[in-house]
Structures are given as structure tokens and as C-alpha cells.
Image (cartoon, rainbow, N blue to C red; front, side, top):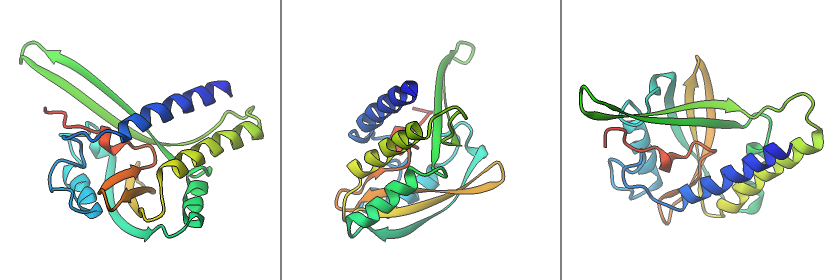
Length: 190
């Protein structure tokens, strides 16, 4: 279980550093000016393709919907419990760069695959609860009253899934997106 804790903490630190930076050519900042939270999702859906995601055909975006504005800590706690549940979706990301000498150009790949948090059968229930609490604390540390909750639906392997994304309307930034890391997805052609 210590491996889970170390991996989780490392991920949280790296993920937090990505959220603290705005990358100009990210998948959500390329396109329309970010004048509203809705522009973020319009850019995401317009840019979902080979310029940003090498295996984009495996994970098809279906829709995004505004769910609610978080008006109290009870709603934040609801999403924290949901994120820490057994039905929570995570995203495995991998990237690769190489140089094609015959064409004299860089080749960049970025792949994204959804997964569900699972534990080996021998994992103790207390270890699982602690891991889930860590996930819940991470969401609670980023999402604040006044943030807007959105749901993104996508199809992967012919099954429709949904994950939550939270936007801070005064700044028009994503503050939490269920580990997909939208700010870290950059244009592969640049």
C-alpha cells in the first residue's frame, strides 16, 4: 500500500504543478478566447483530434453539460465522495517524441486511456479507504464554493462514460478535471 501512497502523492504534486500553470497551446486554450467556462469546453471539443491526441479515435467525446454552481460545502463533499468512489474514472497518459531523419521532422505522440481505480484482492479495506480519502482531499483542496460543475460524456470501447470537470468562472480556468489534465495536453504539431 505504501507504493499506492507514494504514487498518489507524486501524482498529486505533479498534477498540482500543471494546474498552477497555464499553457498557451493547450487543447483548451487553443481557439476561442477564454471569456467564459463554456469557451473552454467549446475549445476542447473543437480541438479533440490528431493535433492533440494521437489515439483520439479510441475515446470519442460525446457532449458536455453544465451541471450546477457549487453553493455550499455539502455539494463539494458530494463530488469529493463521488471522485473517491469505486466508480471513479482516472486517465492514463503517455507521450513519446522522436525524430524522423528521412523527413527531417520531430514526431510527437500523446495517448490517453481511461481506467477505473482497482486494487489487488489482498489490499486491506483500510488501505483502500485511505487512498480514497486522499483523492477526496485533493478535490476539496482545489474546488471552491462558486465554482461550476460540468459533466463530460465520452465513448470508449463502445461504452459511454462521464466525468466531472470544475471551472472557476471569475478566472475562466479549470480547477479540477478528474485527472485528465486538460492543461497538459498540448499541440503535437508545434
